Length: 157
Length: 218
Image (cartoon, rainbow over the protein chains, first blue to last red):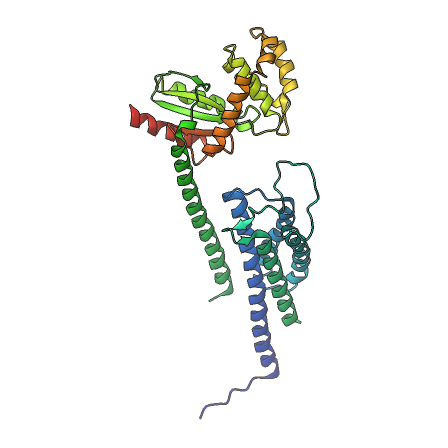
């Protein structure tokens, strides 16, 4: 007759701990994946398609690029405190994309200023395949990253 | 599967996807540029265009340049070297693409100098002194003008200044700008060798394109 499997209290705790850890790892990993794809995508726009990034795009890049690095550093092995360092970057990035999206759709006017070689932030050329506007892609990326990071943190608590 | 494998695979996939899409995009753009150039081949060389080297050469490099463009200055001796290297089989046509602020005045000086047979001397002088008058991607024609009047004895400057406003000079520059846009010469220097655009920029690439045209024509 087989022995019934009985976990001690500490063993049960360990099993739960690892499943929770795995789940939060997956959330942080997904957030990193979004940041990495967004980073590579924006580099594709500027380096391959040679679209000059507008000023607001630059600010969003400043807050997106480090996410791809910091989140990766927090994954192996998982350090859930990475959320604390990544979240401010993602939130500030989100504020910039929200402003940019409103500007892009004309809800707020772009200040009149002399023409220069720089590209306008409400330029219609900022559309992927003519349908997906880049500001919207950026908005979605920052929102998804924030949601995933919050999920990861709430699990770990 | 270990978590680190997961991450490695994701990194690899991203890198492969980027390279593949970039390659596809570039080859498609290259094809488009070639089509655009062959559709507008009559825009490559105009009657007013300056030519250097053997007029009977079967290979012609058309270069759209901006005197204020740093890369154009760096490329100038290289292009001259390429033409010498092929000894009479290759010649050069220069077109204007004044993309920098202030460059319109610089190309007007060039076009007016051409009327006195001083085009190449003035172009060389512009490239040699470029760091002094092209500051922060902005051409300062006055600085160059002062320098030129002090060093070039063979030029009639009163006539040069007058010719800069000559309708023929203005028309030639406007024609070059329009042709450059039509041919997709949006960055300088832009090269076309026997009508074929240099799609991937670089000296090696230009030398290879010239070599293949020389082989095909001689």
